[in-house]
Image 1 (cartoon, rainbow, N blue to C red):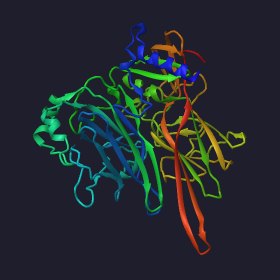
Image 2: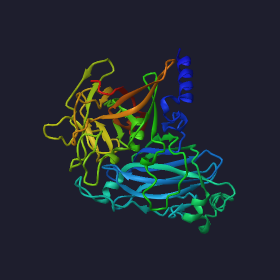
Image 3: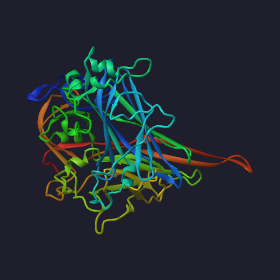
Image 4: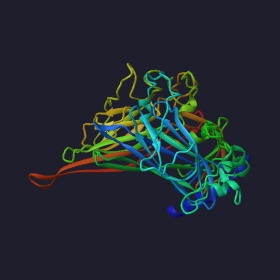
Amino acid sequence: MKTFKQKSLYAALAGVTALGVTSAAQAVNVNPDGLGQVLIYPYYTVRDKVANAPFSTLLTVVNSQASAKAVKVRFLEGKNSQEVLDFNLFLSAKDVWTAAILQTADGAGVGSFDASCTIPTVGSTQASPVIHDFVNVLLDDAVGDDSLDRTREGYAEIIEMGTIAAGSATETAVTHKAGVPPCTASALTDAAVQAAIRAPSGGLFGDLTLINVNAGEDYTADAVALDNFRNAGTYDSPGDIHPDLTQVNPPTSVVVANNAFYQSNWGNPIDAISALFMHDHVYNTFILDSGTKSGTDWVLTFPTKRYYYDADGVVSYLFQRNIDSNGGCDDVGITTYDREETSATPQVGFSPQRPGKANTLCWEANVLTFNASQVLGSTNNRNVASTYQNGWADLSFVLAPGTRGATGSYAHSLGSFSTTVTPVGGTTTGVDVSYIGLPVIGFALESYNNGTLGTPGNLVQSQYGGNFLHKGTRSIIPFGAP
C-alpha cells in the first residue's frame, strides 16, 4: 500500500498542470534528498558552553553538478535575522567549499583555508586562517542590544545565482588547476560574470558541525535544500543584499502533506518559501537522565520571519506581535510525555515571561533548553521545566480560532487563494486554503557526560552527544474553516 501511494504521489508531482497553475517542475519545494539551489543552515554558534569552552561552527557546501556555479553566502544573527556578513563564492564543477565560524574578542567571524574563488577574498593559505569579522552595521537596539555579541549565534543561507557558461573566461578562472583556481580578476568582474551566467541547476548540498574542543563535544546537522527556486540566472554584485528568499520565481510552492499534493500560487513571493516550512506541531525527544548527566536543547529557527516585519519592527501578518525589547513574540503551547505515556502541560517557564501572556518564542533562531541544561550555551534560549527525566514533547503553534495578530490579520495562518490539491489516487481540485502554524526548521541535541569509565583514581571523563531532526505535522485546511 505504501509503495502504491508513493508511486501515485510521484505521478501527481510529475504531471499536475490543471486549472492554469504552474507545472510542479517549476515550483519551489524542499528536496527530501538534500539537493537544491538554496541551502539553509538552521543554526550556527560560537557561544561558550561554560567558561573558556566556546563552540565553533564548521560549514561545508558541495557542488555535485558538472558545471561551475556562482552562489551567495550569507550569515544572519539569531535575534531578528539582520545580516552580519555576505560574499560571493564560485564553485567549480564537483567542488567543495569549507569554512569555520569562530569566536572573536567581541563577536564572531568566518575564516577558510579553501582556495575556491570568493569576492571579497575569504580563503587563506597562511598557517592560521584570516578571520573576517561579522559586523553589526545593520543591528539596532530594538531588541535591547546592538552589540557584536549578537553575531555569536544565528543561521546561514547559500543561494545559487546561476551556473557558469562552459568555455567562458569566468569558468576558466574558477576551475581548479592542480588544486587551486586562478581566480583571474578580469574574468570575475560584474560584467564578465553576468555575461557568463546561465540558469541555476541546483545540486548543492551542505552540512555543518558544531564542535566544542574544550568541552569535548561535536554535533552535526544537514542544510535544508530548496529546489526549483529560480528558473533564470542573475548575478548580483558582491555587497548586494540580493539574491534573497523573496526572489523565488515563480512564486509557487509544492508541499506534500496528509497523503495529498498541494501546489499554491502566492501574491507575496516569500509566502511560497514559508509554505514549505509551515508546521502546526513539532515533535522531538528529550533526555535529562541524572545518571548520565544528560541535557537537551531544541533549535527552532524561523528562516522567513524577518520578511514579515518592516524597518520599525511592525508585523504585517502570519507572525503574532510587533518587535519590542523582548523580540517579536509568538504564543506556543507544549505538552511533555514520559516514556510510559504520562503527560503534563506545565507552565513551561519560558524566560523572560511576558506579563499576562502565554509561553512564547520571540527570536528568529531560538533554542529551547530543557531543565536549563544549556547544551549550546545560547542566550536566545527559553527553558522548559520538565518533571520527567526522559520522554518526548509536542510543541504547538496552533492558536485559538480567529486569533488576530498585532495588525489585525490572522496569526499563525497563511492563506492561498490559488491552490490545487491532488489526493493520492484522487482527482485534482482547486480550493482556497490556509496553512496553519509557523514556518520552522531545526533539530534537537542531546548530550551525555560519563565520569565513571576507568578504575578508581583513574577515571576517564567522557562526553557524548547526538542530534535528531524535528518531526511534526502540517495542517492545510479550507479557507475559513475553524
